[in-house]
Image (cartoon, rainbow, N blue to C red; front, top):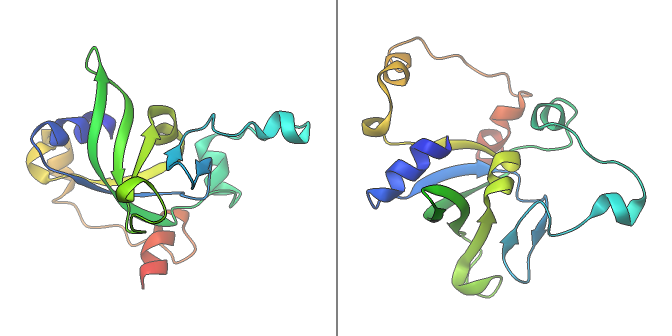
Length: 147
């Protein structure tokens, strides 16, 4: 996902994405980072689950959509992403958030990439019959909430 997202951004095209906005976010500063809070130290227990386990156990879900408008690269490797949110400038810095690359790994569940940027193998998948997700599937959570 990140490679395709980075490629599309380099061509000045933003990316819609679905994520779990309720995790590791500082609303005052607009920071999305897995290290913004240390819950393990605060509560004296391990909260570490894999991304798959968080979805399976309902600890995380795709509950908010935003737009990726930029990326900061070090040696062509992303370390943070510029996010435009719909909450307005009163909530965060002019309506923009900063997402760490680690947060992208852990809490971004879906990106919408222009098919022109897809590799041949993924373009072939577009010709296959779509799989209809059950309403309780965690990957359908955002679609259901948008109704």
